[in-house]
Image 1 (cartoon, rainbow, N blue to C red):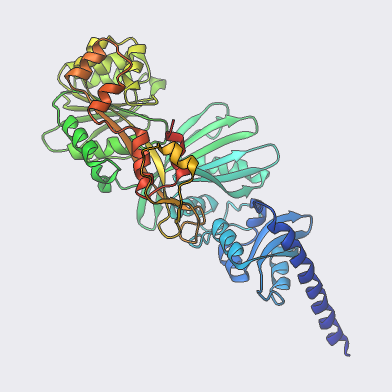
Image 2: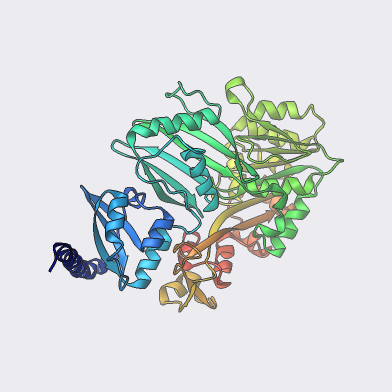
Length: 501
């Protein structure tokens, strides 16, 4: 046998030995409930390379790179090429075809080709920050989180309400990336002790949108959160947000009042701003003077006079509202009622013939009334001005491509009620279409309470127990709205559980 032939034989024997050892490892790994994948390992291959080579890097140990491979795939001519590409010795752990495809789709989204290799580069082309925003935009992420820790820094995307780790950044490069964000957002790069807020106008292939930037000093460096305001306000329509026909009718009736107070409650990220902007878009016409005070201004509306809150110079919700009353307004949108002064001004404004929209942080729609009373507003003033209170939340929707029917077990029947007819229930599975999350998109659910004379009387007497009055008016609660989505096969039991008491 010639030396070259012997060399090739040895290489092939080493490869066969590797394959045998990997098969053994794959059997061991399969018993694990969750396959672990390190983000720093993922970054050694782009999405295109991972799909071409059928490899998923999952760990780096010294000069060795562990990769998941697809059972039955021929890696003989791939191993050496990937070793040259990554500079690491390759160890392949084989997975079943279905299991491998699931993991590949979860960690390498097919649309995303801009994944960086190794250390983040802040030079060349349009830069890593531009690519990062583009990647988040393609993946329909709402927020980008840049976070610094003692030994590592990471990038996470919030997609459908859940945070997913996407990149690891070398500690030495993190400060340069933060400074780049701050420069583009017109923030002070020398100020690292105090929080700052700014905006970036991003152009994505002709589609321009704002990126809201917030910096926060932490013990290991500044944390940056960038919110992508990509939704086109022209497309916002109250009919598409999630209202039931009865709820939409009640809400439309309330916002047509010439004066009064409309309150929307819900935690951060529950879609309150989207509902308010869709409302203002509907009310916006040439005969109305609409003023808003927001923190921050998320979407710009042609024909609406929008004011950005600036508390550092004295422009607060209360002071802005006081000035608004001298601006001959018809409709006022107040970003949030945070304190007693703002609450009193909102009530005063609605009493003087203006339609006021605002948000408040409470757990339920009726809780808005109790919150105003706690702020020192007299109940009789609330009863005279409040025309509708509403609570809302966002629920993830099942992916229509992969959801699977499930039989309701005793636990589900008990949670949904003995007399409930669950219908067809579905569970999240995961596929290439939804990147193996099992969910695709979110939908708002609402609890809408129009205030009539009897409910106004209950407010006047500071009555907290109004459940029987709401039942008489067939007010659909958040729990009932969530269960409605479940019975319609649009969401899973796991998503509904937080709303079931």
